[in-house]
Amino acid sequence: MKVKIDEDLCTACELCTDTAPEIFEMGDDVAKVIVDVVPEDQEELARECAESCPAECIFIEE
Image (cartoon, rainbow, N blue to C red):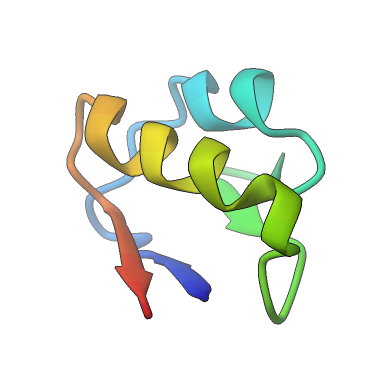
């Protein structure tokens, strides 16, 4: 699984970085994905972040 963030939509609320710091970190202005492929044991957290994101800017690629 891969995760992408649409940086034009991200509001830097930090929900994803707080929920899954192994996958996301804050950049200068927006959140960034820090893994090329989401580890299998973190996939559920990645889905949770995508579903919970208030800006709807996190996209999952299976």
